[in-house]
Image 1 (cartoon, rainbow, N blue to C red):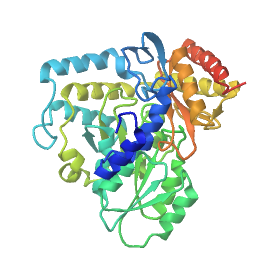
Image 2: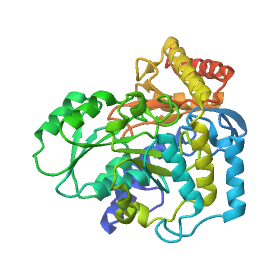
Image 3: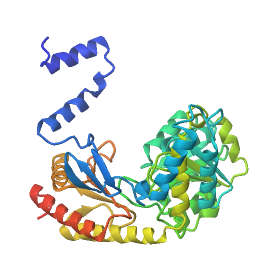
Length: 415
């Protein structure tokens, strides 16, 4: 066998039980893409980050339009100073789980900041937002219980369900009617948890939470809302879509992350349920994971406290989102939502070839966006996903539109 004989290699892999052989089609597809000369859309390296909205990529100053840094807190002077001070005072890490030696004063202060931000009695900080969903879904519902979730739920929600023993029921994306129907078919026995997201990250659409929460309550279900992409700029206090929908009193759990609007890393759950604290003893992704470094929880707590008074930033972010959505639509791009529903704007394209070409043209123009394709999107859906920041200036939004225009015309995406 020669090294350049892929068919023979695949046959030999299958014969020897190579566990990587199941990925051969994906490996070949990726290599064919790279052989065309385009950059790897999933392998971009930020050589230097200049601000929440600018970075150096391959020696070129590039506008960041795909980072989820919604409120621009990554370079906030108070946030950075808090992290530096904690690094000096407490060292680089805890080397332990929250239930052993891994809870420092900073972890408790971060949970206090969350309780103040959300107005709840309880808060639990996890090492990532992924683990927060993994922990709640796998722990709260047993084998006699039901988790009812939107078909477009985030991977962390699905993975949490897979880790647990509950029976899983999916309903059509954002369909109040289908949620009602699915709940109505469940037997009277067993508990039930309806899992919703304030903002769905792929298309940037929001859930009809007011109607969905009413349906869930009608059927006696508990409710969890993931506000990863809504925290910071929805609602009078920036708590999320559930606050804007006026259903705070009816939601049992709010799950979130520090890696979007808060500007660092970590995750959390907040709740008013009187038995909530028992989760610290039974939630495996909390108990068996090393806790966040002191510098990270210090930056998170400082950022969360500042987000409580970020009304001007919220207003500017919404202005940016509406301007970009209208501008792209006026240029002739196919936008996933009829109007700006969140800080995420998804541009739909007909196939992978044009999506990759458009992404490549944009990066050459100095604009970084996210490319998404199946299985991250529904079958046959290819898109470029933009996520705006409160720190994008009016001039930068103008530049983004001009560069989209040039890139779109160059690849035939617009006339």
